[in-house]
Image (cartoon, rainbow, N blue to C red; front, side, top):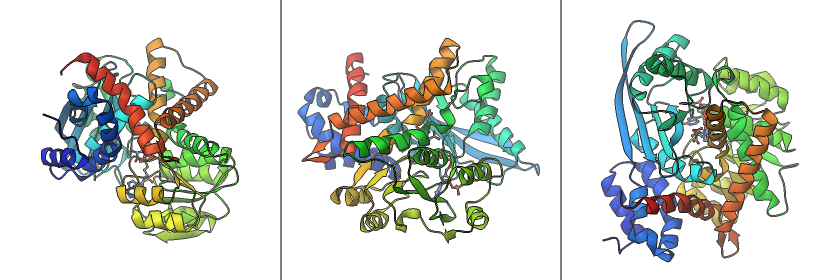
Length: 447
Ligand code: NDP
Ligand code: 2IT
């Protein structure tokens, strides 16, 4: 039945089964391009239709979320949880609250999570969820009422050994606290059902920093592999949320200089570098005052480019840390023309398919998000472990574990990355992530 496993034929079928889901098609294409040749060399996966099974979520839950705003209006949003694959552990992955959220976006994120979580070496399956709710401009009480209503349906489907959500865009410590409180109220149970919790109720040190730190570590590994390092490099970072902030912090620790940050309004360019004090101000701006990155330019007297991405600004290293498809082919060409040497993705799928081709053709070092941003979910896995053993590890111990996991992910990628002398981390990450999940699925038989 699956004798024709050409990329074109496979993608045609996938598009037919999932019409209009552009982001999901893109994420699958990126994987299928490197996995299909591997499957053809390892026919046990082809006979068992593993790729066909891995591209179909185990279960998709969609629900209505109704809440009342401060003016007494009844508001209706859509909530989702895509339980993608639990072959190697409970479903695990973030919740995103952003107006652009739809099933295609969550299926792409859940699919990517399958490979990422496998690469972490920890026993975690993959899921993703969220809502088209826009937290921007909402009061604290409105966010609370929304989270409580969202959890009133979601709680039926999750559990510490079933599905463990966490944060993503628009979902940080504040939202996780509201969600956890409501779960506890509804079930009467205090369990590690969410990660990214506050330290007072079962959260882990380093989880807040983990994605950004891990991304900088991954870049350092890719550079060390060619006898180089972050030290002394000029770095462009996009975004100014959780991942961008802590990626910047770790780049500073490793001796690099970050000259850009951005948000959906535009990009700031600070040629002197975003040092620890400026970064602390920015984190306060974004997490507590919920302001715009343009305010940074006023405060520290530097340039602000409204409506622009950072990629036209000269840099040695680029770290896209905002959202999907924020680095397109023209951006990639600008990076190449300006002498950029390497890209490590903090965001999920920030680089379009065409842009990846541009970077790879120019032989830039390119680390895909499923490897380079896996530090966040890895420390979520460590939060689950600490909740299970009812202990809390120190920051030093956790950072050491995070460092080791990122080194391990880099080693796993290298095992499958050789592409006629070019180190192709896309291929490396996809194959290494695939094998563990695929072998578990084979072992379970036909289901
Ligand atoms: P935050 O909500 O903390 O920050 C998101 C940042 O991205 C903000 O600066 C936001 O700007 C910007 N952004 C969001 N959407 C757009 C858009 N459409 N165009 C331009 N800028 C945009 O989210 P995180 O930092 O947690 O997440 C950033 C990325 O990292 C996402 O791709 C996420 O999936 C990924 N990721 C996150 C992990 C985590 O642990 N949090 C783990 C692994 C990956 P604005 O405020 O203007 O919207
Ligand atoms: O994309 C991601 O890996 C995350 N948003 C983190 C998921 C998690 O469960 O910590």
